[in-house]
Amino acid sequence: MLLVHPIREVGKFFPVLIGLVVAGGASGIGPWALLGVGVPVALGVVRYLTTTYRIAGGRVELRRGLLQRHTLATPVDRVRAVDLTASPIHRILGLATVVIGTGSVASGADERLELDALPREEAARLRSELLHARPAATPDQAAAGGAVPDEEHVVARFSPRWLWYAPFSGTVLVAFGALAGATFQIAESVHLRVSEADLAGIGTTFVLSAVVGVLLVAVLVVVGGYLVVNGGFVLARYRTAWHVRRGLLTHREISIDMARLAGVSLGEPALLRLAHGRRVNAIVTGLSGEGQSTSSMLLPPAPAATGYDVASAVLGDPTPVTAPLRSHGRAAATRRFSRALLGSLPFVALVVAGVVAGGPVALLALAVVPVVLALALAVDRVRTLGHGFVAGHVVMRSGSVLRSRDVLAADHVIGWNLRATWFQRRAGLVSLTATTAGGKGRVHVPDVSTDDAIALAEEATPDLLGQFLVP
Amino acid sequence: MTQLREPAHRVSPRARLMWHVETAISATVVAVGLGVGAYFATPDGLRWWLTGLAVVVCAVVAVVVPQWRYRVHRWEVSPTAVYTQRGWWARERRIAPMSRVQTVDFAQGPLARLFGLASVTVTTASAAGPLQIEGLDRDVALALTDELTRKADLVAGDAT
Image (tube, rainbow over all chains, first blue to last red; front, side):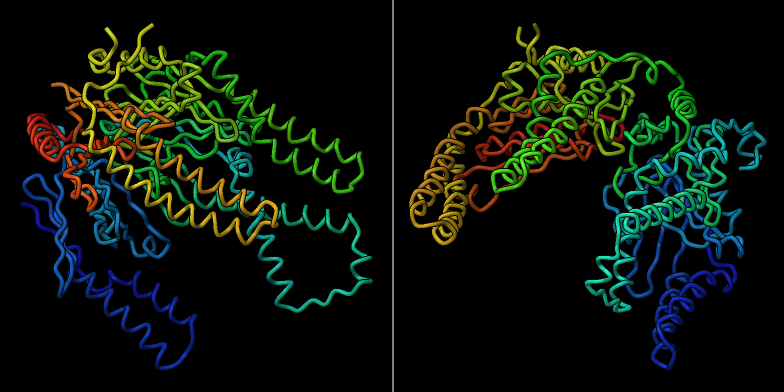
């Protein structure tokens, strides 16, 4: 039985202390502020001192709390991923935080298997123990501990060229919005008085240059953010797990057990496609898509070819990534067009109403814009729509602005949902969802012909649907 | 041309009455809201027409939807899988292998208790895939819960 107390020296709760002093100091000076710092620090110290963990009898146990004792326990074979994070303060002190990912849906702060501020070597040892010990470690491996000089196989490594893809990831729009909002706030708080004459002086060039300026700053912020989060990115395979290392300031090392890797999702949003980029996420059993999406990232926005390489390497077979997919035919295409056009209708109606209300007739030309946009969107959506069963994987691709190609191993499919509205039933179509225990819990493709949907489900999970078919 | 057939069993006929009561309650609330809105927010000529329309639409929904729902809602349990169908305008069929069943929930709301009905929810490890059967006769639901729990217990592994 291995019993380890994470606390060896008092100095190790320093990260908590420094963080709190800095945060508390910013809020004001005085005895009250000191109390405000002192109480959380005391609580942090108590929490730190009372947290212990151990691995025994095939279980990880985590105990904490002084008055209200909390014991969390999970079987070691339920561990899907181990996440090592080290903030700059942690790094200075040689510490790391370990988060153990299990299949649990409950993700409240109290239910997380999280160990803050472990010494770095101990964190690494814990990780290798959790991930590698399980498949009956051979005696020589066990004897050598975690330091077996096995070859680490690197699949992708950060290159400064990747920064080109950062502005195309969609976060630029968010940053632009935030910056524009902040600019307005500042303008308001300094009580800028704008007179009629000033307004007259504001020309289109001024507005344009202001917008371009904010956009430039937004791009810089996003590229900087990308560099800080993804700098030094390495994706590598070591023994039976995939390891993702990244971060310039805060180091993160995410390890995903290969047996729990259900598939990959290749994100190809429209903007990123323009730049010939692609991102890759893992669909991991027990890592939910929401909230933990950063821990399932296999590749940040990067060159499309790198995306293919990573996906092929992770799947162990390039065909599910490259194979042509079965398109969904006329009925599905008709639905894409009618839905897109229906969506543009309100905008057209708005323009028409404007003309009826007395606007110039030339305004009607504006009504063409939403229609053209809708048609372009529909064409792209039709081209994207596809599905297939390739080399033991269910492959589904859909979307346009947020296009993605999802690849899910057949033995990770844990159910099927077939949903059809009255319109879809009339057109002989059905929206097909394969459910799985990881990621968003499902991979989905709309408007498959009923025959194709059943054929795909039969191929992926033989003998499941057969019993429910019309004889 | 392969086709999925419907699941074998209908839910209890009493479910229709329960759904009628349920939709009638919510339809009344919506109708009152829409009616009041239409009465105050529209010009005189249209007022009664719009109020009437809101009431008629809600009444039709309360009468038609439960019947439609009853025709769609079906379920079946085979030795190796659970198969459900629910909805009305949009019909959703869900199939889960018995080997992936994680929990079986038996639930009775206040209205369901009044009618002697219950619902059974079968969950898998996926966030997207609970199979729900509403409006089952209470005894049928209890027997089903028992059967499913027993079958799910027989399977080794953690059903992911």
